[in-house]
Length: 196
Picture 1 (cartoon, rainbow, N blue to C red):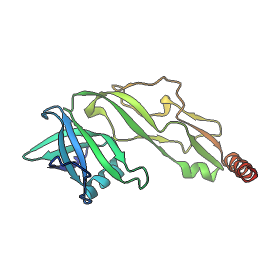
Picture 2: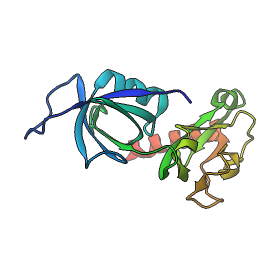
Picture 3: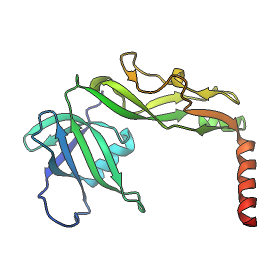
Picture 4: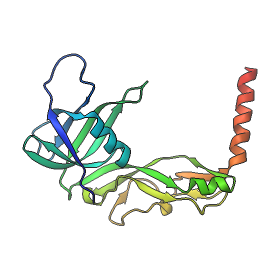
């Protein structure tokens, strides 16, 4: 597993808005941390980690003279710009049992388009329980060989057998539909909007 290091810098608690644009405010808490500690993270380093490893990335937090393992628990974004405005990082031991929502990434959508098909996503993440060391940042699903009407369910997700899933087996995460159906639905919606 790649070691991702994010430096946390102590942040003085000040009333009013956080004004340092090159940093993102946050907190670290959990195992081996005394209470919730207000910190700030370099905005560019954080953006790179979120882009490459997702919003539940496992990270090593370098804080003062120590380095502790944890994961990004919550990312708050600005409602208009979409920029990250606050991050919570929970510190845990690698053997710690946690509940986590892991994003699902679908591979092979280009192959579907070549066959006039596309993926209709119903659920883009899964809730799991297990040891932190077993958790992945993303769950990949190959949909390149799927056919019209096929669904993506728990059987399609490549999960470690030691991880428990907090969802029913029959949950549908996506379905393969005709590209033409989607285009026709969009045209009907546009026509309906013009009439109203």
